[in-house]
Image 1: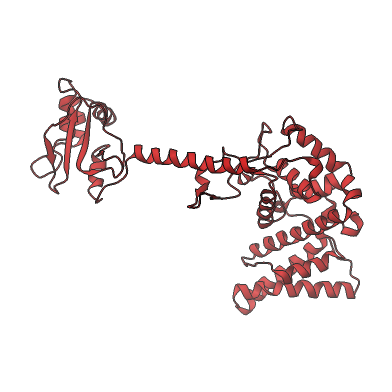
Image 2: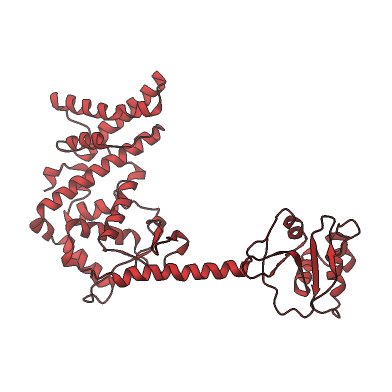
Length: 400
């Protein structure tokens, strides 16, 4: 349905036309002397039964014009509005866009809000959203500088910049827009990293974000989809622009200084990312078998134990076999999918125990196409540790 406010009409008070259902329609022709006045009257004219006298096709043929031309002329020369349906906000009458709109309107009861009022409300809400975001920015006293970043912050932030920075290097695009490469090995982990950076004020919501993804709350705050807003960096005044900050951040990460100054933090981050590599692959394998699984503490404990001796690429081997066996168990025994998926952890543990007891040489698997090396992994293992995807093919003790 099309709404607009009735403004600056040349004529008012023309006869009211009523259909058989007592729906009232008033027709205002802007210029009664216009040669198009008759065409408007025919288009909106009713017979005694409340039906339109002539079809659009008949009128078009009588005047030697197309149906599209007819509708264009009618819209430009007259306005048909309801005498029973009005806007709840401004009180203006409902304006029919065409005959179909008139017929469809009979299905509705009561008043509605017109387009002008809807637009005004939306504009007002948008201003309040921008004000709420700006208030957060104004109250933030954190100044981002490379020297103050921890290992995790530096790696995560640089990975996010490489993943989501806009072309002009003035801010970060919506996280979800980059579908061509992975930010981290696992989707849930990616969201966790984003929240972590935001909670630490390392990134702030950009007021130029798409506001439909932001909802105002009654307490004056707002909530939002974290992967659907833009971000900017609250840079210290020491930086002329984001490009200068990125250059300094790159130098800091590649200089090996983190290994010298924060060795234990680097080790812990390597373990964390390696774990997420395995969880991401576990979810991938089980999804291929249409088995849903939510890795918990038991799964994390089993994978971390495996990573003490084996590389991520070798743990892929255990995971793939466990997924295959779970799928076979489901097909063979007709158990619920959840029960079949829950066998994965035990299977991984048994494989590790047998491999260690027999001192087997565990075959390393390759990365799958849909789980290529992520930006977090590239920044950590390629740039900071100067390896070629070392976190995938090497154990932690051989990396550092």
